[in-house]
Length: 304
View 1 (tube, helix red, strand yellow):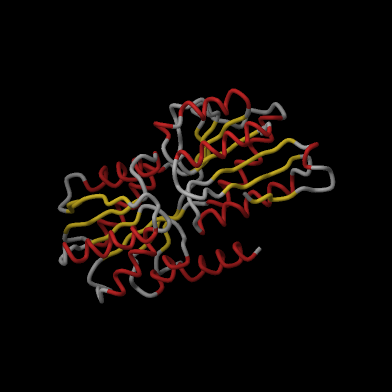
View 2 (cartoon, rainbow, N blue to C red):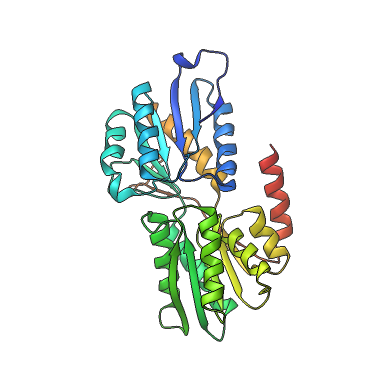
């Protein structure tokens, strides 16, 4: 756990707001910068940032139980396995303000989801795949877990766009957010399907593993790579011509808006929350035309 800031007053005198990640990745470093900015603007609150030690629903439950014991006032969480986390999430919602971010848990009693429209983001990725493979071909997709809502929605978005096309999805390989396993999945794919046309990384760390495996296999330029998020290795892969493009989210806004929004609700203002509870943060596509400028922006943000 990282305490973002304490201010002058004792932490015990302040209401605690917490953000809980679903993995340890650079993506969440950027989100933490957003929570730090929110902390600067909320001196009467204690903001805490929890990076899970392992990417499991059990680890998130442990953190949530600890926070409830301490009397947390607000929580924003990227739910790893929402289908099996409803009970603990609703327990949090009974005692504190609950948001989801990055990956939703729509069956829970969370008040708002702050993040990407992941099905729409998947559709953006699907269009990039079609652009990269105008003559069609076979692709493999890679992701941490298909139990998470964001993974399911991204895959659905890609299927929406590729349906009826001459692009075939061979399979979706999961790795349970194990980076070494993620790389092995790519290596195994390149061995088993030497003529595979495209590789798609759905989580922030998947595309860097694809980049390393493609480079090591000498397949640069032979296989098209589409990714998600703004990992430095993904951006370097675009600059080096290994990655065609990546769909980036705005994790800084996930962190900032989560913490600011929790405080607003605690102080009695829910007017900013849409009727459907979805606070959508737009995505954008990074490719060779804009990667250099975006890399500079990310370096500045992470260095803060």
